[in-house]
Image (cartoon, helix red, strand yellow):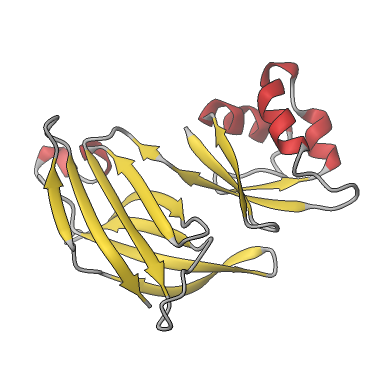
Length: 187
């Protein structure tokens, strides 16, 4: 599942299925990518009947004659053995809301993409992922996490910074899942 966020109005629309993204890329590739939907009346009309529930959610965010930019973020990527969470804020301790965080595992030769998450209105983020996202041939037992952070302006995400924040707390649950809590990350 993916999370869909209305970037124009800074509000969460809800969850969407990866299959919906795939189907709609075949129907309207110029309006949807794996990261973003350009929500227009034309896009809504092309959504097949089987996706009525998602269409209804999108319709509530539609403004006649206007294009709404909707960002797509991961909530889980290839499993849930690992989870990261934290809060982004600026130096004035104000939340960095609706910022995109692209999460990577640093490797010697080529870094692994772990997932993309967008902070909520309080600057909080959370992403679950599986060992398959970062462990080459099962050799790594834990990821070496860093973030690329982007802010929204002029209908697109723009680079803000790259950061390797320290883990505030590492928790192993009774199900043997590992949670990396980054606490408050100040930029």
